[in-house]
Length: 432
Image 1 (cartoon, rainbow, N blue to C red):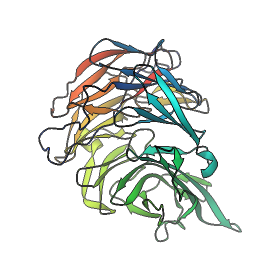
Image 2 (image 1 turned 90 degrees about the horizontal axis):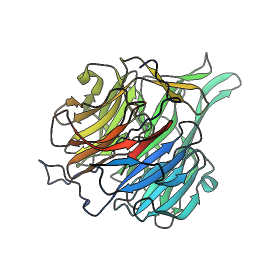
Image 3 (image 1 turned 180 degrees about the horizontal axis):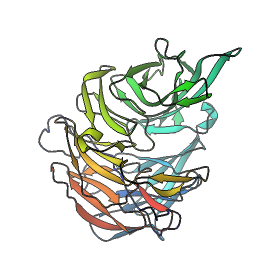
Image 4 (image 1 turned 135 degrees about the vertical axis):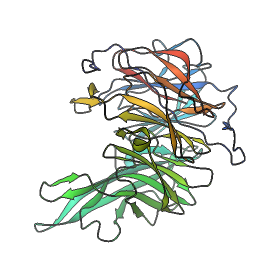
């Protein structure tokens, strides 16, 4: 593994999955509420791991057989930093944020590689930030969000960080921001946390529950001796009233310590009771906590690293319903390999990744049998359809497959579907 170099290898394809919750009255079987017999799968693909990369989409009627390739196929939807992609539930429309530019495109999917751009909004103009992040809240709207955090001094004495939150709600039908968007929300932490140096540097992956938006957060503690942020001993979540985007508050816990904002994989999922499952990741520990009635539930904690018996790291997870969830995770006890470069052109490294099936109700885990040498950092979305969990997986430098796992089974074995093919510095980033 130590000899692998992402830039010189011939192929890397992977996929991670976003799932559909089932209805309350189905307790034995997990059912996709969206009929699948007439809806194509859509697959997303990225070419380039640096600061500039192309993002492509194509529809495929069957992912169980054959070969899926983006050579002479797919529609280019972005040439900027890898897009954040959010299709509608029926698959007819796709909304795509070009990160670092702040533009959101609305596409109509007409089948196969045929995507037609309908509208574009440059949200960076009204919101005053190009590095906006986007997350779909429901079939009508998405959140556009950003936060800045800067240390403040009175003469030479540090007095805390000034945190300014930018929030806007994008209406999918009109592709305009709803009234009341804000770029000047002054965020105050509870008690004297701010004066102690605690501050939030990123927010993402919001969910809507009981009239409030909950944003995952990356929290740090400012070190006055070094003038830099450092790891901290708390977990924070930003909460605002919806739809007013008012009353910005922060809730905290020490049940698990780390970030809750993730990267491109969802970190928060609303269950059948309206409670929020939230992933907390930090210090080679990965946990799932529960928020109930606006507060952390002190009686609930799911520890992936403890159940697996090894240190782990993750960017998010996917909820299949009835307490079942799937999580891509990095095996931190294994040696790291170079898998590419970061946006600054510096080498980036990762241990191999795996996939686990979590039973949050019974506090159990099944480590799934998947290929060795996976890299799943940039995976965005997966689906559960007809009781199967779909993910495209390939080891670094090798061809891959679509894998299908029976959601109602505790077997670690899945079924191989269609082969996936990609070239150097190219990879699958989602299935919808």
